[in-house]
Length: 355
Image (cartoon, rainbow, N blue to C red; front, side, top):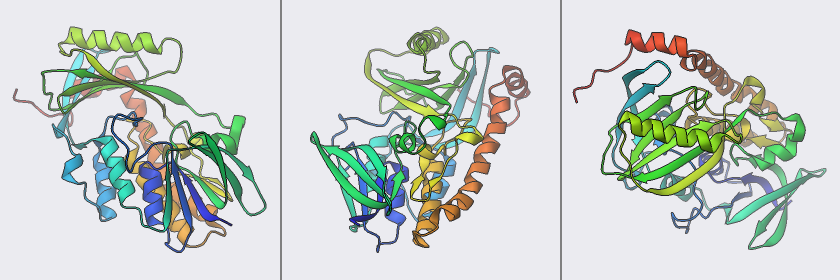
């Protein structure tokens, strides 16, 4: 066997798993991006780049501290919640690290030990089951390569090719499309904007200031109206008083809003971590803390031996799944405009602002 473990995807889940696995394993890590020598201008993750308190806590537990060179202005201490359905606005205290997401991913990859073979610029294409595990195929510079592995790990995000090939048509995910545009602006907004408008989406939209740019994003149902709904969002924000100029970058990606049935850990010779496994908050779409936690749970399970790792992982992942289900309960209030209006009018847990 050429490799004990192949990890598809070098984002936070994949990079964390590669770093935590026993160094006696022979490990291959693939990613279609170049997170070692690549430039920011290449393909980047469509993400707001905010590190939430739960993710900060998990990094601390793993003995890590975010380098200052990947933090960007401004740092964020308030959420401005705008409810267009109820014509309400409130501020809530929340402590985020505002960061360069590409730089964050590069930093996590830089922590991976030398026993891991890192293959950047490689696009995973297929897997086929064998008696010993899997044969995996991937493309590099328009050539197809194959490797034999005992365990394959899908850490390749919401539209996981690994997950699709493992479960195929029997897997019914509830997915949205996340659209973000970056705009020139002279305004430095010192908060994260959470926007609720059922005419645009039954999920939510957001605004984030980042190094002199304003990001406007929304999680939309992936249908033919998504582009029109996004244009409506921008027009509504301008009417509300937001000022922004020329669009300098557009991004899009699939994002999950998991139900209990969407959470899958894999099978006897394969595992799923991060959003590929359905590990993401259905209320806020916060995924970094779940990426770290699922990677840690899988690393613990594999470090006890490849044989029989899946039942151990499934048991450990159960705690993460229960937290996601609690987030689902929270969603019933957040995304019911009547209940949300009652909570916001009450002012409970909100912060007064002095500007």
